Image (cartoon, rainbow, N blue to C red):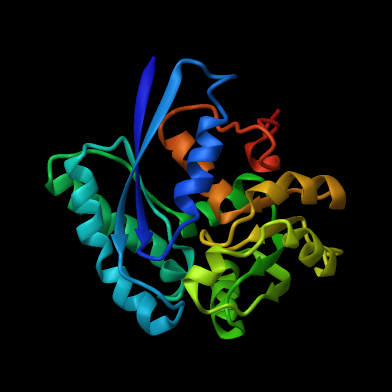
Length: 252
């Protein structure tokens, strides 16, 4: 049996990544009984989802990566999508390179990924060019997320902003309400739906239900992060009932 240590760099008020990522990876234990995962977090101070707090918080990601590298994690995930995307197009590349250097300088070799980069990669992996998205953010931040996604060559055809600025309140949103929100999205021009373009807004229980209901592929920042965690570890990117990206049907 192989045990993998997963390091998570999260905002101090984030309560979702440490539930949804373990839930997805642990759901693999029956189809992949040779795998086990442990989860290790370091936190960056942030309470309100504003550009000012996000940029200040991002500075702490270096410290978090260093701390997690002390535990010799097998992979590290920077789990705050909007903190990356509000920094401007392509910032996930710079962030991942910088954190990789921090880890390497500590004589650790863990691959670094970000939820922002993972979402872009997930959409590209599916071969899609047009998505509709749901975010919990205030509209100006949603517009920054849209600009970031579109700078990567992916068109956002429609969006819904739930306009919740308190990050703790975002984590308490009922994921099943996303079914109704998704019904309000105009998906006529979209190849896929990003049910939660935020790693703090819970969505996992609704992803497969929305995909089955609307008949289009559904992914989230969290499922994209798990996809990249698994591929970085050299494992099959398959999670039961977590949407098309993790269905195992890609390239088959």
